[in-house]
Image 1 (tube, rainbow, N blue to C red):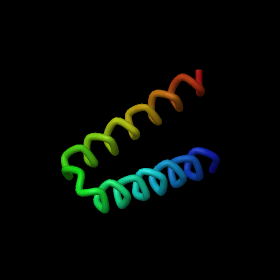
Image 2: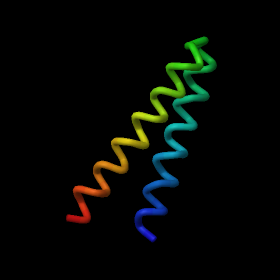
Image 3: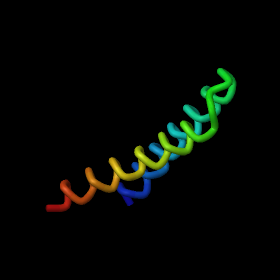
Length: 51
């Protein structure tokens, strides 16, 4: 349950950053790259935390 809540919080934060970046006319590929990196970092933290 905690993982799902954390995942939702990170996804929501990433979505907010994406909306902010769009309003600043940043390239879409940077937004996608940021979202992917955020997810990989989250998975890494969860894996390390479980061990």
